[in-house]
Length: 89
Image: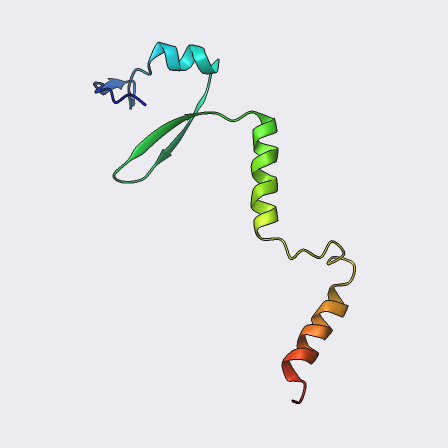
């Protein structure tokens, strides 16, 4: 990864910075994604729809219950959870 100092210039009502041509050509870009907060900014190639599907699967699997029938049997699982919580030992 190369660090390059670029000038910021005013373009209409906003600011702009030139992105290196090789970055644009290599990634066949027409759009980019900006990740930013008050102190930092990162520019990434926009993901294709295939990449978005893969990202969704990663996120949903991360928070998955592991029970594929949860929408159908949610009452059963809720009852089991309550019974387990309040059963006498």
